[in-house]
Amino acid sequence: MTIYALSSGPGISGVAIVRISGSDASEVIRLLTGREIPKPRMATLRKINNINTSELIDEGIIIWFPGPESYTGEDMCEIHVHGGKAVVLALQNEISKIKNCRLAEPGEFTKIAFQNGKINLLKAESISDLISSETEIQRQQAIKIMSG
Image (cartoon, rainbow, N blue to C red; front, side):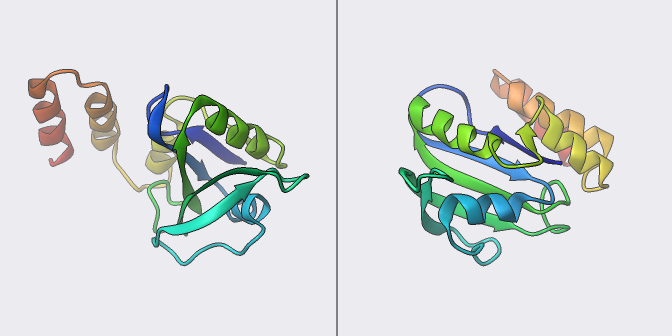
């Protein structure tokens, strides 16, 4: 199964990041761009299109992280697009049409990273703490735990 989700915060922003992880991540990129996957860990500008109509959704940055050298340990990519709600929804709608792709549950990327031995339980919990930190003290504490 391949999962995807908005990994940047919800709402309107200059940039939104949709993360995709799983065995079909490369196929998602091929279908959305009509091109082969970019070189690993290199930001590449691509046109992102509707799968069936080739209508342009947006032009954005694709970053490819082949497994096992990725956060989750699986093939993974990030698509950086403009952060308008309509852009993000159109992109997620197209990904949802691809066989074996589904919306990730909250924390599922970190859960997969833990299951694949990429991070330990302490680091997984500290990532959650860092994401939810609201004060400088909370941020510092989460960083201390992450650092061991």
